[in-house]
Image 1 (cartoon, rainbow, N blue to C red):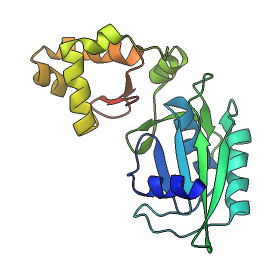
Image 2: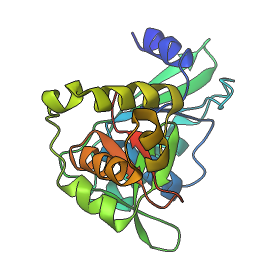
Image 3: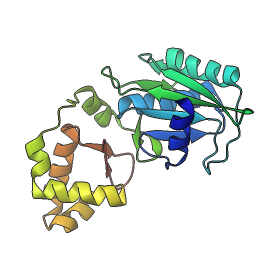
Image 4: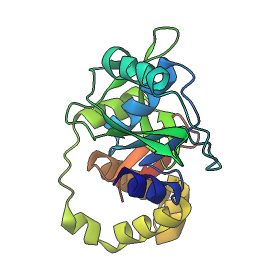
Length: 212
């Protein structure tokens, strides 16, 4: 069972739900990834595999010690994780760490300087967000408005984001032929509706899909 899951994951690209690491450098960096998955829509951290899918293997004890410390001490509030291990070809240990989307978000990650930062998954990246996005995460309702999703401007946006990963208000305005002001308001509304994430630390502000 675990072998099939691992081989299936190995065929996938890193994404909002998947991250490969040959090893965990320190617990603080693990905390960023774990918190980001918890704050977005969950995911799997695969340890012992490079970004290019080279299977390096790892020490289960060393890596899980850092990951458990991160989940219990460096993610606030703490999160529950599950993990399984797989011995590839009988010689290289690989770990699959499962993180669920949290009902208690936002979760902060404590960095090396003891700063508390909220991270999310934006496509295949772990990204810090502003205080404004943190407040939005705190109010998320996971029940997405189906009528909203059926609107032509929203359907066009989702199709665009599945192909291009991110969009600015200017790009969205051009896509659906509306004013930049209206595009901004629509994107902000979709963010509050739990459909998008707003990366306002980027200039200009970028929006990405939260799910799908």
